[in-house]
Length: 230
Image (tube, rainbow, N blue to C red; front, side, top):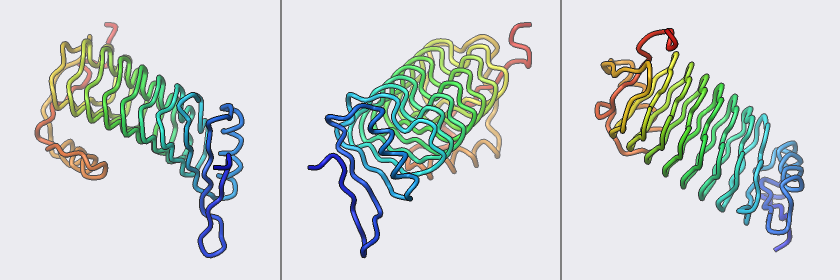
């Protein structure tokens, strides 16, 4: 297969297929940006050795048909990214808009510093997911590690499985929904009652991302006070 192959429908280019096997991340990112600028959908093959892919994109559709390294979708500003494998650390770091879906597991710091957009992980996520979360939505269908949602100041984190220690530590604002159990809640967190708005929101997310769970099975976790250091 050639490093880049453009597919056409009725004479018009619609998608570019990029084999990343012998390419650097700079070369791949250059090809991605060129394709997105031309309105092409991008499919990447053999990207296991690469990191920092699809950073800072304002649009486009990227499908990665392998596992990938760290910092995928960094500073996402509107792209739709699908990873058909595992992702390394800091997936979706500092995202603003767009959507990232990981069909496998994600490493440390998934969605850290996010201001917006949606990050959906269908496997497990490591420690520090959603730390310093400022907005947007993080959904983990599997389990998460320790200190998830540390210093969270906005947005929502949905964990369908179990969580580790110090969940929501030093939360200031935002909401965490947990279906399973956690080893411990963090400082300045408490369980709160699910209301109609929560159930509606959860049902919408679960249906949209094809996650088999019921909204009323979740527990709601919110800040105990607006001043976690008081």
